Length: 269
Image (cartoon, rainbow, N blue to C red):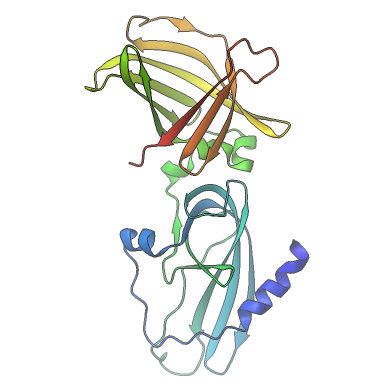
């Protein structure tokens, strides 16, 4: 892949952009609406090419983004690498600068960002001028171990998820929330009354070609089992795809659980 990058940057350099006035920034709502794709992740590299004239310095860049989460758009998955095209323009002529746009806000290797992209001709272009948004420290700090940080696995499961269960006893809503390496699970009836709740810790692993979610140190905080602890670990295969979390039990060696699968949907807050 690295050998192909000079050709990518060279192709970007052929595109001439002239803007005579500063481009107004998009609001958060406009960024979400105008983007064909939105991803969060870490910038693993930035490739740039500079062209100079008597008056201008034009910089065409491509940010290599290791995707931790896909918030909008098809064709990108967690763990993919996305190349985001953007540009900057700087006045280097004599006297005052002529009216122009400075282009995009830039990024650097190691930055954790949310990229608002528009797919054009098979390439991803960053929305001008503020399509790159830095992820807030509180959002980026996920109390992760090094392996989780490296492949974005922990980031993908963070947040609140829910599913609905219908049985002879009625309809129930189950909500789980992952924060760092801790989980809270709450079972409610249709009126929102809490029937049972528990807290636990978890770790993530990759075994062969599947991901494994293991939870342990369970403490029931509400319901008939309140105060009870279950320290023994339980594991299942899982997959996160966008706003869907699929949990499959009974597939691991030595697993006594019957085969079952559950689908959780992300709660956008």
